[in-house]
Image (cartoon, rainbow over all chains, first blue to last red):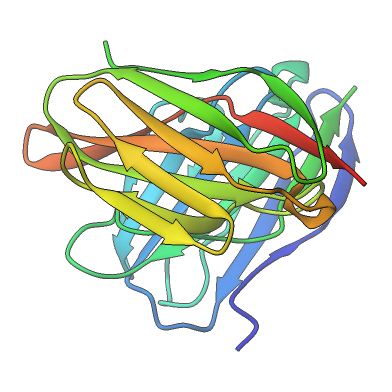
Length: 114
Length: 112
């Protein structure tokens, strides 16, 4: 199993550009989440999904969209990039009774917005 | 508001020098505390889950303990391969759901 995969590994955008961060998992996990990690701060939840077709907002959803058409894929879209979105983004999946059970993280995407 | 604080921010150890990392929390109704290890340039990797005060979990040179207000991650006789950032996260109940709050992490460097 590849686990949770993310592409790209690195990305540089200009302010106002849009892009999609890809995330896929091959573990048949029901739950998937997107987090951002900034220096000196804990991981913060952007959006999450409890199954195909079902998504919801986390703590810091503004400026981001998600969709989940299949169990495997959970892309994160930046609508109009801003310098405040410079961060490392992690996708995670989980299974069990609750979406907040053990998180299986991908390798991350380091995004810089100029 | 839930708060999770990890200390120290950074820890430099000599190989074999045991030490402890702290994760203190101010939350309403703990429903689990998680420890993760994060290597540079990689995603966090699960280590332990603790649910109640007095509980302990061990894995190789790592031992996690939990009290009502904090958790400790003890590293016994560390090796250079134990160098990583260690994250803790607390789970709390919010309406009909649960929420995870992550600490900022402790970066451990073990010198040979």
